[in-house]
Image (cartoon, rainbow, N blue to C red):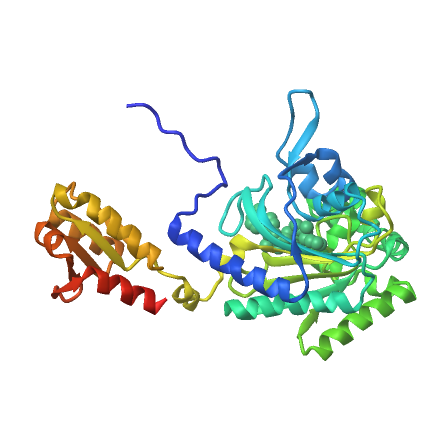
Length: 420
Ligand code: HAM
């Protein structure tokens, strides 16, 4: 026997039952996001590697070790997109939209790729639902975006969520803080974890995110970013917090929340689920006021978030499944070759009348066909045989009770049309 071909590590297939859940989540997303004025953008899965180097950052884990990068046939360095913000900003700059109606409110859904160690809630092909507001300095929209997220989660029946919020200040505040942090950490270098020692040189703010026990102890007494903010950055953050209070959205201030992507300025936030464990966020987001300019565009302050759709779906409440529309509950079954074409026609007429139906030909006999109907969850089988053909009726069989009755085809179709 020939060898089988396995799936690529960290990738998954979604069968119809799974896809039905994904589609329903996406339908809720589209409804909620459009109520906030967002329109959908679809950007390419492939981008020039340089885009992510210049935005997410050369020293970030994502660019440093997690991208699926390769040279194309002409030697151009390309990557499968590991995130959606840089591509959206790139597309916006490319299309010269700086003078369009601003702010632009855009959302996206789709696959993203990171070469991470696969485990529950972490895949190499994963899926994000993201939204970006381009060209609004906030702070009102910062809170509005979080409100939209909470409304979306609320409509899904999602509970047990916590919003964590922080500010990473503007570039100058961050530079001040970086100096203070380095001054504090340098004498303690030897006590830091290996990862943090490396970050000391490349990206010291990321050390704040470390979960290593030794590091947490050292960090407990470290200087805090909040004490190094410019007045403007502090005022922005206070106003975001006040707006969240107005909306009665509880948000936990998390002074050590720094995100793993370099483009953030001012507001950053995450939403974590009690069901996933503290390590894994369902949502990550924040403001990136300098990114568009850094990518060669206008100086348009912007903000956004991305939901990890895989994690969102893994933590959906059980009741959610009850909302998923079921497949057809009715089958047309041809008994005997003579009934094959009339059954094909009847099934089409039923669909024409607006009802869903599965067609089963005469190929494998009554017993096997009824077994198949059971396995599909069919409730009613409309059987068409020689007798029925002669009289213009079908025999309807209730699969639960086994009861049968005769229906005049014309009347059946009329009643289906009426219930539409
Ligand atoms: P991120 O925090 O890197 O942010 O990713 C957002 C979410 O994507 C994470 O919270 C997580 O739920 C999900 N995610 C990330 N990697 C994986 C993975 N390997 N498997 C499963 N889920 C994963 C961003 O990507 C930013 N672009 C968000 C943003 C938009 N900031 C501003 N606008």
